[in-house]
Image (tube, rainbow, N blue to C red; front, side, top):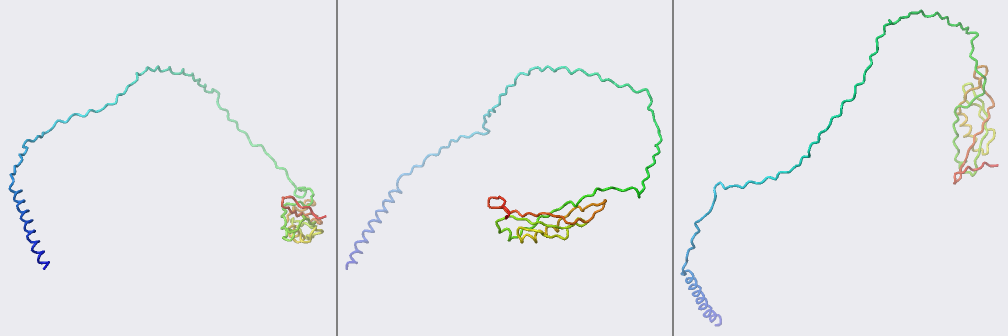
Length: 214
């Protein structure tokens, strides 16, 4: 029953609103409309004149040219010409003088070479044994050997050593040495009983040589 009452109230209200809007629209359309006049005047130019653009020119000022005086050329030095010789060139001819070379007798001619002992040429230092490096003293070895006519040591013997560890390395080192052989009457000969000393030096932490054992 309530829904039917709502329909009876809503339909008349909708009709009234629609009629109101309809009459308002008719009122607006029926109003006088006055068209605006068009402005028919127009201005335009054909081939308009263009103003010249002024070009700025840089003004430069030229200083006056001063007249330069050219110095005179240096004086010419007189060159003296040498006179040609009047005497003819002399040509001398001579013979090669005769020379007779002196005759040398092979039997009587001998080149004398003074006698001398064996002289060292090459000395190779020995290899220090590792066991000796662990010690606290330097050392040496005295060796005795013979020198052949070719300058090579042989029969090398260590006569005395401060440490027996040094004997083997000392002998191997001396065997590699080389000498100028001993000369007797101009001929190389062997030399016996050559004595030499091989020293082994050790250094401490400060770089000073450690003394040998007493």
